[in-house]
Length: 173
Image (cartoon, rainbow, N blue to C red; front, side):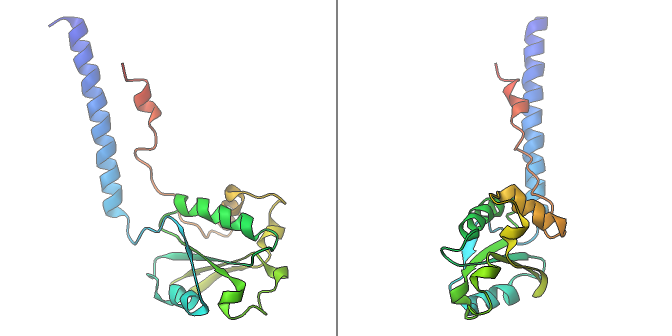
């Protein structure tokens, strides 16, 4: 076996070992991740559904509820932001409900929308009204994420063992 062949075999071994380590780390992380995964925003159809999601969700699950109304400034933008955050924080249950559907539309007038309510184990952790007024005029998911993190409400982001694919890109011949 030539030196060149030996080096090629060594490089291939390294690539295989790197892929195997990533796979093992991902599997270990998945085994250690407790609770359900949501990965999308859930539309709540009624006040009863709103109460149920707060009261019956697993005690370790963070529930973020967006109360919105069609045509109210900032509500559609907040819906888009939460769609992005739901993908980034799959262990957080993001929900939205139209203010009219809550059965308490008079309490949620357009002046206080968009509203974010944050619950864990049935307890209200955060009650944020007119959230768009606390953000820049044109806000994005990172702004909402930063806002929630200011209050320590979001968990650590999910570990992505396979997210760093550029390591492998330089190894492919």
